[in-house]
Length: 233
Image 1 (cartoon, rainbow, N blue to C red):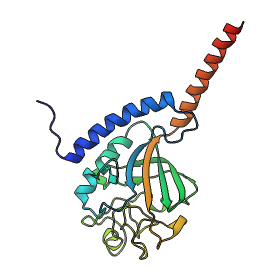
Image 2 (cartoon, rainbow, N blue to C red; image 1 turned 30 degrees about the vertical axis):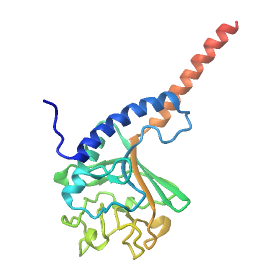
Image 3 (cartoon, one colour; image 1 turned 120 degrees about the vertical axis):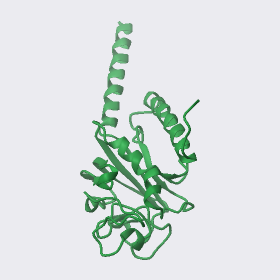
């Protein structure tokens, strides 16, 4: 008798992970070295506003949504992915209308549930401005699990869930389209606290994945060049 998934989302996550694994193998062979999206695993996406992200603690642990549209992959899954000997970088791709920007942090992982999924974020680079260093070392807060340092629950006050402090410079699980101060999908260094973004994507990959791929590609080209030169002789 085969394994029985506990939910539709868990089943979808399993098959999507298998698909993603083989897709990355294909990309390694096919795509040019200029491709910056290779090896990324997406953790969160918002692009339509159809999914309510004001969820409870257990929902944020398990994950929710549709992996081909809007979703949160789950804190348990993020912990499982990042707590390995491999160091991961976290990339935020952000958008508003035709505008696009990004932020990358070079050492991302979260603590286990007993430590409330406390955030390690690393050093910033990018074009969006640094919103996440403020949240370094903070545990996860939801509407039913208040772990921030504010007088009120930041998840309730700001309509989302995050590694809130007192309260946020980033609120990417906030209330879609909400233009009230600090309520929407905010990235404060880029668009402030009253502009709600209409595209967000969080994704991780091993640090150095692209440079390693470039090295392999260079070695392949050098090998082909040697073979070609030998034939020409």
